[in-house]
Image 1 (cartoon, rainbow, N blue to C red):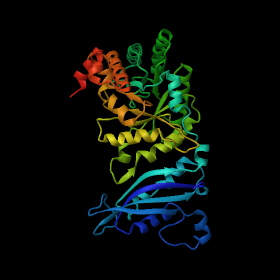
Image 2: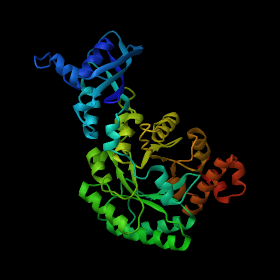
Image 3: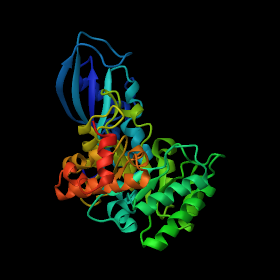
Length: 415
């Protein structure tokens, strides 16, 4: 498949799955609703999508989605399609259109989900992926052999630049590695981006002068492409080491427009992910979706967290995190650092480490640090103690005997 793109799907259909797969291939390449004289055998050989595999795995009695062809039962099948690279070239926006396009609306399907994709080398040559990734993030943060302990500015909105900077100063003094804006905080009149960036970086730089360690702060620069570039440059000029974007808000073209300009790591937030994924027979798997953003230049990718406040199960979270750390191609790994967040506290550290089997992650606890009963600084100490224990194979209960901050976190956040 050196010059072909492949994608795997899960489909549900009232018709023969092989016939449904043929409809998919036609819709997403040279076909339409009727046979055209111009769709010659030569054109089909050159440009048509191919059905590479169809495997029926189940039969259900009720359709998952309304509006499709009905029948007495519905086959659930896995389908693999492939396309020649020549149809679209190594373009990520057009790859997304090719893989998804009109498929979700076709009446032949009562369910359709994109599971995975594989791309030829031309894609990773044209879209080389994260500029920093795991290695660059560790180098800039100075954190090795353990996760980056991170938090989020809370409340998400409502603090002015001076209040935000004061919180950052306290967290930096406590030894936090990473802080991020909430995705709701960008450039509102109550907390203008430029004022916030200057105040926060003043606090971070003063702390770095004292300690020799610079906290990585992911400033939310989400906006129009020119705005994102200007905000990135301001952060860089101030000595910052990270910027953040909301992927579903800026889109692939916006992300590419930023990443090809950026000289700082890009912290990629997936807010809105639920509308692409929550229905099990509709939308995208994270495994497929995150590959687009890694190729587009995302250095960090949010994956949710264990025992989170959302609806995602722990196994799915770990599967997503492992996907970010799996090479995209043997010749182009494009690894991104997974970010665990959502109702995270020190209590998830050991389980996260055990299940992921790696310390290459950012563990971002908003309320789990800022909401510590003894203050945010104690929250940082508690998270650090929990992770040190997890990596050393020490139980959290034993670790708490030597860490009052961790002991109080267990009382506050535990069952």
